[in-house]
Image 1 (cartoon, rainbow, N blue to C red):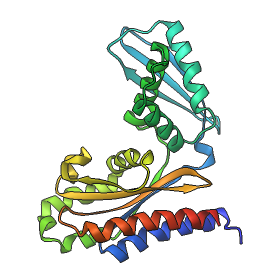
Image 2: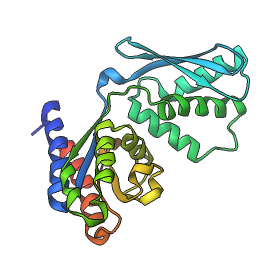
Image 3: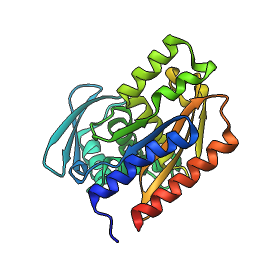
Image 4: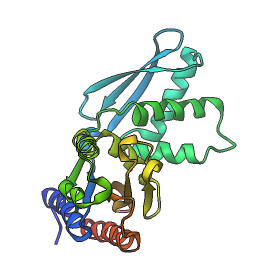
Amino acid sequence: EIIEKDEKDQVVKKTSEYLSNITELTGLISLPASKNNEIKQIEFLNLSENKILAVIVLSNNKVENKILSFNKKFSDSDLQQASNYLNSLISNKSISSIRKVILSELNQVRKDMNTIMLSAINLGKEVFIDKEIQSQDELLISGQTKLMQFEDLSDVNKLKTLFEAFNEKRNILSLFDKSITSDGVKIFIGSESGFNVLDDCSVVSAPYKFEDDVIGVLGVIGPKRMAYDRVIPIVDVTARLLSEALKS
C-alpha cells in the first residue's frame, strides 16, 4: 500500500514520540523541506569592498536575500563563475539536500578543485549553513519534560535555557546538519555539540532516507551519563525502520 504524503508526515511525527517513549529521553526529528523550498538558482552580487549580496530564488519564485561578509575581494566575473558552479550543484534541490552536498564537498576538497569552485562552495556554506536561510525545516520535539528526572539536568536555570533552545530550534537543526552526511549514528557528548546550551547533554542522532536520499535526521537528547549501549541501537534501528516505512 502506497503511503500518501500526509500519511508519511504522520509516520515521521509519530517517530519522535516513539523515540522519546522507548528511551525515556527527549525525542527529536527534523522534517524534510517541502517541494516549494527547492532552490531554483542563486546569484552573487558585489555590494562593497567585502560585502556580497546573495539572491536566492526558490521554486515557488519567492526570492530571499542574504548579505555576506568576506575577507577577500571578488571580481564580478569571479562571482558569476561561482554562481554558475554552485547552481550546477544545487539547482532544483531541497535545502536539506543542498546542505548535504555542500558539507560533502567541504569534507573532500579535491585536488582538481580550482579557486572559483572552492570559493563557490564557501559562499554556499555561508548562505545555506551559516546564515540559516529559511528552509522551513521543522524540528519535532517530544518528551522535553523527561529531562527533569535526571539529577545532572535538575538545575532550574539549565532546564530553562535548554527549553528555550528547544523552542528556538535553530541550534539543534544546525547540529543535525552535521549528521546529514554521516553513515549511521553520530554522537555528540557535552561540548562536542559546539553549543554551550548543550554542554551538560548528549545527543545521539542518525539520518533517515527516502528512496536512498537522506531527507532528515532523528535522535534523542539526554544527560551525558545516559545508557549509550541501549540508546545507540534504538536510534540506529529507528532510523532504518523509518526509512523502510517511508519506502514501502
